[in-house]
Image 1 (tube, rainbow, N blue to C red):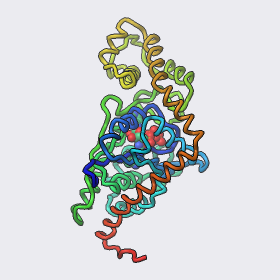
Image 2: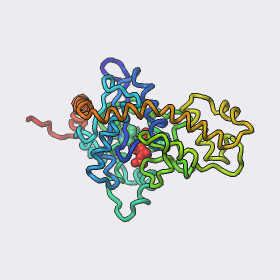
Image 3: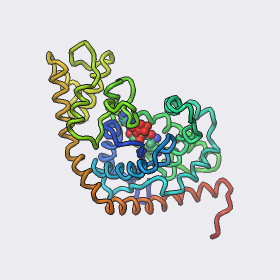
Image 4: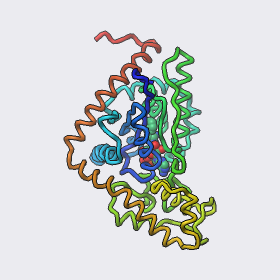
Length: 335
Ligand code: ATP
Ligand code: LTN
């Protein structure tokens, strides 16, 4: 709860690529519904992104593009605090303090670490291992009550809760213990090519994801190529994971229920279903895409937003960090 009695939200997205439909439906769309009711902090988490190799120039571009995508999706920069994680140094500092209270065993159990480390065995870095602690620092610095994320982040959020409780019990009440907020149906949008894996912007197969910033033709082509099965009927079952995923996406985008959609395509083949679905997706993304392009041509405006955002975020973050340093036993800075 902030000083005005509003609950606080924190969430972040890595500028590790362009935003996918999974990021939109699993995370950003729910932010736009929450922004009126809560005080929201949304961050481009560039420090998380460097836990896997990044080209510096590409990372810089992706960070600005991500900001433009947030705003294009309907996140109001006047109403919310939008900032770049590395601009608020308190994240790195609280991360360190929390690292000293996190057990190796806890981090060893993290499935995202296991998955990602398989992809970079030759270059396994300690940052990838401690990634969830930095995420806990992000959330706890702002005393967030609620964290809207896709359900791939459940385990990380659990650690943030655990660390908040651990610190509070060891010293005294310091952190709010945050709750997760997971959208129904699309908490996990799956890859269009491997429907048992989540849609991910760092996937090496670009047919697996739909990007908010790609052109309409590409989106339509990817949907038509999406992997289904040989059953040939539009059903919503675990035996047809490809189709189940497409129905979930269709439902989330059109606000039609899963049951309505299944009924609409009774006796029709996958071709008709995919054709309509592609149309609905493209239609929904059209205004986001136009706004995105417009914003990218207005770099000064984007700069203003992230500067103002970091200044606001820092005030809040410093308040928490000061309290933490005090409790840990660091001598207060007198300069
Ligand atoms: P990367 O591939 O680099 O790991 P990512 O696509 O998984 O990136 P993140 O930046 O890690 O994206 O996540 C941003 C937000 O989007 C998080 O809240 C995450 O839970 C959500 N999210 C990511 N992928 C999906 C998905 N496939 N379905 C639903 N939500 C998702
Ligand atoms: N780890 C998240 C991104 C992220 C985040 C956060 C989400 C970093 N810090 C704090 C919510 C709150 C991810 O990979 N999706």
